[in-house]
Length: 323
Image (tube, rainbow, N blue to C red; front, side, top):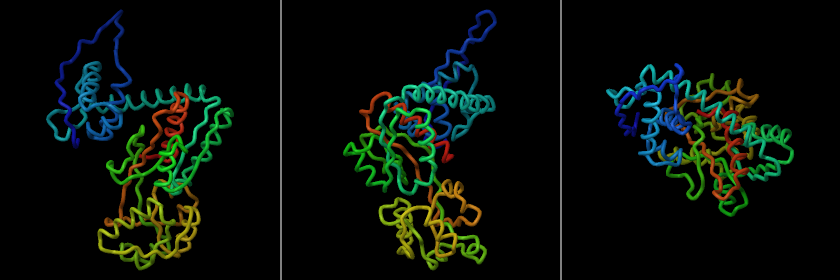
């Protein structure tokens, strides 16, 4: 695993028995560290995600390995790979973590009465199903007041800085672009690709030059996806050929489906829309862009606000099926 500096000295712990029952003094923190390290393939990113130090990541994984009395990683491989036992334990740990999160969600929602939370999401993610999800939460917990604001990423971060929002969901191409001074968590990856109608795809539209000649249908300035595309084209010494400027994913997809031009959208969003069967994503290497989805919240939220925010973020993640 890249950036993996975990040095695990495997000394199988003696499994303690009481009336022939095996005792496992496992900690959920150790399980979370193990799962996160396997997913991110980096002690540095794992430490950043969990808000702990890199040595603490190593200690937690060592502790889990000793509690399990098996070797989780093959030390003879670089990057580190899971052993057969390690893979089995990893799969079970994922189930444990999922159930633990469900328990936290249940407790948080029971405390959600009279909790007021203001969340900002980018316009580009407005078709993610979050509004329906919020409506369902409010049915079960009518005293919880959840306000959703949409806008472009920089605008939302500005409102967060001015305490006009309690938290935001946003995207970035790299970790260095994350905002500072907030409690921040990575949620997964969006795979952004050029999109055209199936008719145009069958006619041979396949390269970035084809897409440039066709022209782009994009959201107005401030849209992160548009900025990402513009930057990628500039790296190739090309200027964006903007054909139509729109506001909102729905009208953008309508025009792309009609063959008016090319879009630049996230695969995870398109797969949830009625347009999906009429569109084709173009996997041209020059314009394949993966971006990180993250959430950031103010540090001074109440305990109830923080728990409710975490519940909404987890459900949003599941709805969008981020990887």
